[in-house]
Image (cartoon, rainbow, N blue to C red; front, side, top):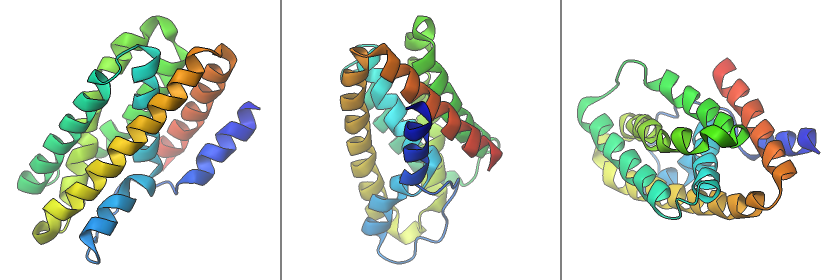
Length: 181
């Protein structure tokens, strides 16, 4: 069961860190961006799951979205920051660890908005400067939806510790792929 779930997670998105060159339709590119990178997808789903598991219903997802958007504005204004890609990769590992370590869940969950800042920063760097606002509207919308989906999954996982471990294992496998990339 764990292996099947991990494989399904890996098939959902292509592993990628940055996806520069959003020159086509900025809104469409923004809408698709969180779905086309395993790092972004897993961080958002994992944060939603953690919000449910730690009973931080709206606070954690909203703080994550605000932080991500603030990071995007910073990336748009200031460009790359040293360590951005490393922080993005580590965010998936921390989300997986939080799911697998119930005694540390709250502490690790509270770190997710900090990691979201770096995810957003990457979005801001990748966006075409003239289309930043349209691109941002797209990625913030889909990021919010992924957080909501993660929250729904987390509500189910609260009742099934075996599934919670399987989800955490899938997140850990995804984190390994992101770190290897």
